View 1: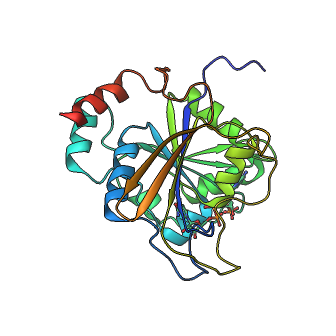
View 2: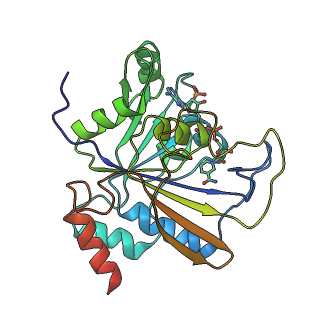
Length: 250
Ligand SMILES: NC(=O)c1ccc[n+]([C@@H]2O[C@H](COP(=O)([O-])OP(=O)(O)OC[C@H]3O[C@@H](n4cnc5c(N)ncnc54)[C@H](OP(=O)(O)O)[C@@H]3O)[C@@H](O)[C@H]2O)c1
C-alpha cells in the first residue's frame, strides 16, 4: 500500500561507554551521561512529538520519559502541545508492568506496539493505560513510524536500548543520530551493546556524515546526519519545534 503521510523525523539518542556499551552488566545500572548532557537531552525531548524506548528499557530502567524542565514544559503548552511528548514502546512478549512509570507518569498519549497475535491479550491487561497497536506477525520500525504518522506524530526521539537502535539503523529510517561518549570502559561481555549485528546502511564504503561535535564537560556529543531531511525545515520539525527553539534561545 502506498504511504500517503510523511514518516516522522527520527532522532536516535543514546550514550555509550568508550568500549561501546549502553549500560553495565545486569543488574548493575550505569549513568553514562553528566548533568549538562541530561539537560541537553531534556531540550531534545522537548522538541519532539514522541519518545520511544524498547520494552527491556521500560522493565530495567523504568524511565518516566517526561520533559523535566518546567520552563520547557511551559513553552510546549504555550505552543499548544502537551507538556511532554507521547510515549511509545514495542514488545513481543507483552511483559510490561502496569505499574511502570511508562504508564503512570505524566498526562500524555501512550502507544504500545506488538505483533497482532499478542496485541489482544495485552490490550485487556493494560486496558485504558495505553493504545495497543497490533502490527502483523513481526513489528518493523518502518511500520511503527507509518502508524505514528497516521496518529499525527511528526517527530520521534528514540532513546534506546540497543535492540531498538539496531533495528532503526538497519531499516535505514533514521534522520539523525545523537551519540554521546562517556569517558569510561564497561568491559563486561553480558552488558548491552549500543547496537547488535546488522546490515547497516553506513559502512566503510558509505561513511555517515558527521554534522557536529560538541563537548559537554567530560562527555562528547557526535551528531550524524543520516538522511536528506537532517535539519531541513520538514513538516516534522518546522513550526512548533522552531518556535520552541527560538523561545529557548531567549
Ligand atoms: N545509555 C543509553 O543511552 C541507554 C538508553 C536506553 C537504554 N539503555 C540501556 O539499554 C538496555 C536495554 O537495551 P536492550 O537492547 O536490552 O533492549 P531494548 O532495545 O530497550 O528493548 C528490547 C525489547 O523491546 C522489544 N522489541 C524490540 N524490537 C521489537 C520488535 N521488532 N517487535 C516486538 N518487540 C520488540 C522486545 O521486548 P519483549 O522482551 O517484551 O518482547 C525486546 O526484548 C538497558 O540496560 C538500558 O539501561 C541505555
